[in-house]
Length: 363
Figure 1 (cartoon, rainbow, N blue to C red):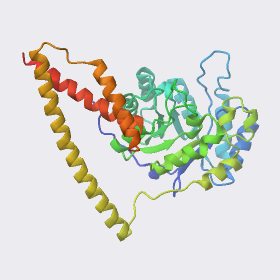
Figure 2 (cartoon, one colour):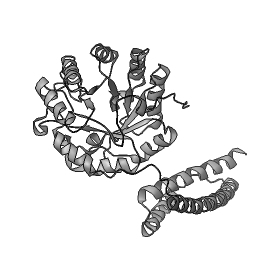
Figure 3 (cartoon, rainbow, N blue to C red):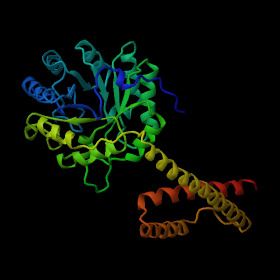
Figure 4 (tube, helix red, strand yellow):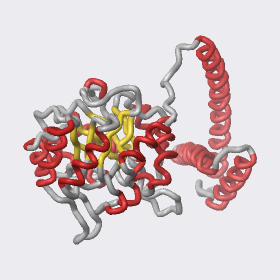
């Protein structure tokens, strides 16, 4: 069961300046001292205050470039000294945490593979206990919101109050143009549950390609997320990892300046009156929907009684498949997406099955 989180807002961390987006940028991997410092200078020159670089890289196959290791932390320290930037990197073990503390790393993030592992999350939480380092947690590789929340809870129970999240999308085998499925629905759900969390999007890992970075970054801003973590390299085409998704500092500057940043609300009286009137209409529609759902469940209960009398099983797969197919077709004619109507009808079907099962259990 999820618990409340005791969190310090990101605006009190001393890292970020308003207005949105808060931005963390730097190369996928620290490769050489020269590459790190050149990239940092390019980012610093147009106002980026928080520098990122991967020191340890979790890779699928052994033998791939797995990061330069602890010596790269010395380069991050030079970034702090020369440009006054805050520095950040990914950690996946107690050893990583202790090394980062030793070299004065300002902010840590936890990757998608690590956040999916409660054993590693507890190890990291224990290593961080008694520190005041801000930590950002990427979503697990699969869309499991409880696993994501559980990772945050472990850190919070260890006393980490400067907490935030990074939404980087989810692994998928579906044919999509991006590297990862953006899965914005889960991000919106987490944002709704914990509005106080610093909430970043990682368009680089969502996209997998430079050409999609702007559209995904804009979507994050349209949803009201706080900031972006974007991969930037002084010479992306020569990067040792994830070359296709990195931007040069000047290109990142151009992208950030292209974003339309929307206000969270407006004090304009005409806006307030208009939005209140529209929301009142929504409230009436929602009330009617509840009444219709109640009526539908009453019919489902009657169906359950009829099936019980005639000794018929609850699940009728053929009927459900045909119903869903028909609803998807009708929804498309009304401009409702297949994804939305499938989710709605599946929820209704699950509740209908529950109601019918309740009827059968009475006898």
